[in-house]
Image (cartoon, rainbow, N blue to C red; front, top):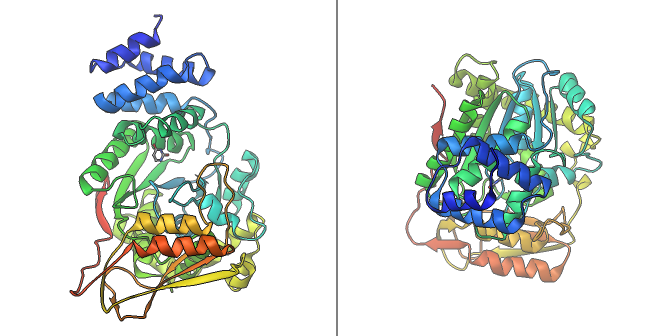
Amino acid sequence: MAFNMNDIIFKKREGGRLSREEIHYWITGYVAGDIPDYQVSALLMAIFFRGLDREETFNLTTAMRYSGDTIDLSPINGIKVDKHSTGGVGDKTTLIVAPLASACGVPIAKMSGRGLGFTGGTVDKMESIPGFRTAMEPEEFLSQVNKIGMAVIGQTAHITPADKKLYALRDVTATVDNFGLIASSIMSKKLAAGSDAIVLDVKCGDGAFMENLEDAVTLANLMVDIGTDAGRKTVAAITDMSQPLGKAVGNSLEVIEAIETLKGKGPADITELAEKLSGIMIYLGGKASDPDEGYAMAGKALADGSGLAQLGRFIEAQGGNPAVIDDYSLFPQASVMDELKAEKDGYVEEIAARTIGLASQHTGAGRATKESSIDLSAGVYLHKKVGDKVTAGDTLAVFYGNDRAKVDAAVAEAKKAFKITDKTCERPVLIKEIIGLEE
Ligand code: URA
């Protein structure tokens, strides 16, 4: 049957359901360059207002998944488990959970992204390790996982080109924040990347796409349904992003915090999250008979140093200098530093994650556009977290960079993030819900 883009836009504008064939038509036509941006923009806006149901979202995910190369991980033995975060501030979890799960026998063959705007990306963080390579040919990627149990690289150019084109268009047409579009964008990449099971970390709060729990639950359920319908075991944890995760925000600062966490000296929140997520990965990877056993195994891999040893093997295998684990002076160093101090006594009630993310971006740690270059040594280190007691003059945060004006701008921005109150404050609940896991 011949389709017409105008009819498809009209159908969605009037609240109709798009068939699998119609979705396939506009995705393949768009990637081929036969359907112009202006028609896809109109359709995206119609989708934004009318929504996509479960079946449409699955069909859109599938069309995007097969719009380019897909990765065949079958040459790797065992159940491959992927993990994905919807993005946040200070989220260095991959650098901790991948070594922990892999130290427990779960093969990790993962593709990660770069940071944009106020959110960071694992690929940039890994590149702060001297010599570390984030690009590799498929054969080398597969053979590294078979040899040492894990590999993490940047997403290759040929995976889900439909998502790349659509995301760029959504970004400039105010159509990013739609459940079906976000879920299909994320899940198309995860399914194309080939793992057998997927653990999703859906961030919730001021520093995340989903600012409230209800929306985060809706998105998580949608993604778990898509993964399940595609035959992949999929679990989603909904976790706090009202304040930054851990204390370090910025590339090398976050790698150092990941190493410290694997040494058992990390902040409580990132340690708890890493144990939980890697525990779920160990269970889904068939190495534990239930989630509780998975959590215990993750805790043991952290306590006995096997996760840290695995991180060292991983860094070395990808060309990085594993000596960074014991000598942090090998990381790129900042030449400019500044501090933000508390102006009064009290308790930290809020550290707005988005504002700290923006402050970190101002130091030079984040990029404003995909083309911007970043300062791998720059960022923010929090000395206080929500719930902590402070005395006037205490250091709330330290700022690092190589440009005085940028660091000054970061301090000014970060001032807006902190709220100090007279009354004691509860720490936010870190793991709010887990969806798709039979405990
Ligand atoms: N992350 C993605 O990959 N896609 C979205 O649409 C939103 C977040």
